[in-house]
Length: 267
Length: 282
Image 1 (cartoon, helix red, strand yellow):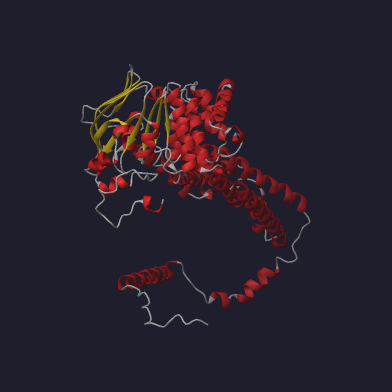
Image 2: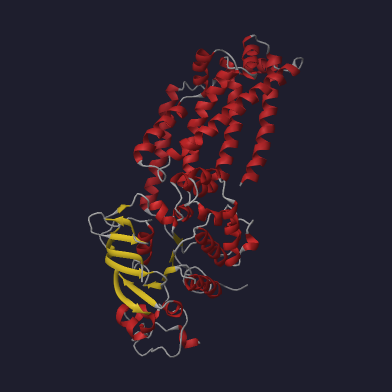
């Protein structure tokens, strides 16, 4: 073996005092935040032990799951998927122009600031809340769910799309500008080809999330499997509830795997 | 002789106080091939971008840029028809500025965007005649066999030739090239410069910025030298002797402006012994 330390040992780099202090403060803030939230969240960890018997009994009521109406569950699950398909598709179409209008390297501040605020609002309010509003507006049923997903997803996708646009390389766009192209043509030929793989990936990811959300918006009457889930829980039909949940889990898992594969191909 | 490019009293400041261009005036006649030389930061790119209408000059100035007898910008205000004017000027960039994920043919076809109806450009409905023109342009630079490949699959030299083809599809009468060979190996650099020289022989006006003066001497009859945003020389390239360059830029900077060392170049002026010209090993 060759000795590499025949001279004085080089000094190890020291962690600066400023950095250590920063770490200390950061951890302090996190711990203080958790402590302050304890009261408001009514944290009672002991309940996990004291109510253990209750929970065990409750859980046992779900087994064995009752698959008697499986055909019906699958039919409703398909409706849920269809809600997610339309909600996502409408959101993608609208998010393309809105995403461009949210990007600070594409439009002046007096365009992107107001558009961003509107998108913030669409994103801040949960799909469930939108679903309840749209149930009132367009009546019970899947269409209310589609609209709820559409509005919320537009808020999310427009932000994600604009982040991709803000990270593009400006040089190809300048290359197209130099040929005498119009601003919209610069976007179509210079910007979109650069962001397309990311946009596809984001859209597929949102579709996955929307399948999950579509099961939930059903609970407020917006159609699909959520309605069945809510009704069986309310009717204390726990074996049926278990069967519905298994259908949802199986579908979501399958779609996650599929869209993961698709996203790999897109990039 | 008719004037192709006329630049009068152009100044350009970026955010810093230092002027990228100060009071530059320049006239290029039709059919000329002019080299623009200078160290990095001397204002070559800025001047070319100003001529192409990609950059505006300082507002409070009497700056004016005329291209092919029409005003392209004056006092920092672009002309209304700047897009039509850009279409008549081909621009070659140092980093090629192709769209990587699109095919070579589509990249080339984009040269026609400036002169076809807008809606056709938006929908990608290019004319068949332009498609033939694009293939011809690719053939001319020896890249027609790559038409269906993505631009990102090509080497730097190949991408630059595609960029020239894109400029040709514009049917321009002027080509501006901003350090077109700075990122290329000597063999690719020669091909690109040959392509530009061939265009010039057919009557195209070419203004090309170069980092290295020997390319300017070999390919261009006339050279304009910039230093810190000011034109310090405008005349025949043949008169740009090493002594002259030393006087313009100082010995150390001047010695860095040669791509190929040559033995007949005077090295006596070099007082700094730590900077050995490459010629020592040649």
